Image (cartoon, rainbow, N blue to C red):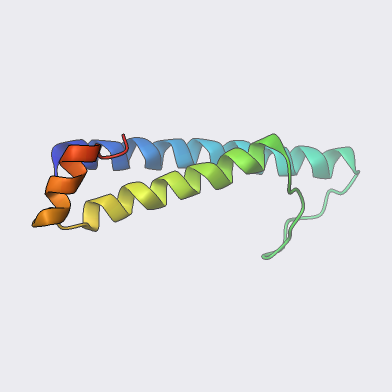
Length: 89
């Protein structure tokens, strides 16, 4: 685990939180437009395929990758290959 990986995970987590809040606001906006003032129930699938939910999904994937990088052990030949080809960042 490196400082760079930790910083990347923090940045991705903050971006994920930001995009989920935007997606949540979009859901509430769609409910208001539909005249539905009921509370959201767990499991409600209200808005999919929007720009906001797509960004939320992408941020989730990026956060997952950053967290996996934190857990990855940096030893052996794999490290040499990553150094040769770049670490994808």
